[in-house]
Image 1 (tube, rainbow over the protein chains, first blue to last red):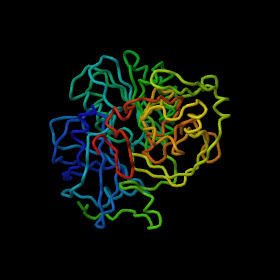
Image 2 (image 1 turned 90 degrees about the horizontal axis):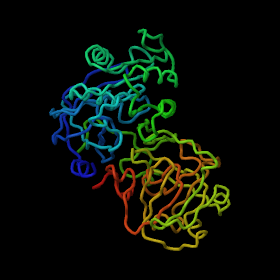
Image 3 (image 1 turned 90 degrees about the vertical axis):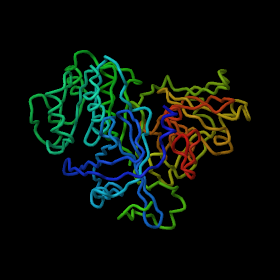
Image 4 (image 1 turned 60 degrees about the horizontal axis):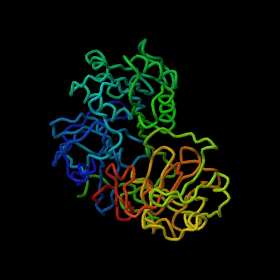
Length: 248
Length: 201
């Protein structure tokens, strides 16, 4: 892992080849790598913007696309009202622009690889991005690993990758999808209309054929604490629960 | 390479010499961890000093809290790119831990070990001479759990993953042995002013 990262962590210029509006606050940016790299679902890249006077701003974004032969990776970026980099992406960046990034980075929040133990994914808002890379990889690889995703969003319209997830729920064997809406009634019988709690996590984990072998949790600090404690209550070891918390 | 249309939110000049390259200021105090936030029962709170595999001294929680206290107010810098200025800490200086164990310069390197299995490596030169402490209080209050309470290492001049949360021991080593993130692609030393974020930076 260390060698792989060390060999590929150079800055490179990438062209924005497509921009897709995902929700009212989230857009996907498809970037063509000039130096393609192999990565594992769950990893991130660092993006660096440079002002004319040399000032730079750097942020980390999880990769939403599954590892593949494509030279194009997808970053799904939420526009933070007080942000510095995300408003640039939403308001300024266009197809054809060049962005500097380096990656793949992160050697912990990683799809576990071949295993028959189910994987429990718990995300909030744009925290689904690295989890989406895992689900897409699970589909593309055909690994027979049952996966459950519990995704908390404010409203039905805020559910990132909603239509793709609904389609995967129909087409992908052993994929369990549960949506929790915090500001709207649930749209489906199997969903929830409240904030995450231990009972909700246990209910979703219970829809897997057997207990999960590991859990990945990504979201705000408060969300991750509740979800990680709930995963511990399922009987998972602390070391089998990997978390990513939004930074600043 | 200049990014078309980007000017950024550049800090005032009076602060810019305190913000390392690639970093931006925050007013809040973000929480980042690799796993669940541990609950450490009072009976399990100990601190152990080792040289190599050999335990040199172990303190109970009350013994550790009775060691001399040091305060420091420092700027801190997280590798995820946030920096926070003027953070106020109180704890036990590594110098005072060594002195209480009767050690002066054990070995050139150390690993900090934590209740949750986390570890990180720091040279002795970056721990001693008043540079680092085991912090017990933040802004005058007992350290909150999600910021590493009851005790975290504080090495403020290095990227903040070196300031290991939920620390329960220091192990001095002859060689510079990689810890948790250092084994997973992050830099062995982590100087924010040299942007030593990842292995070969």
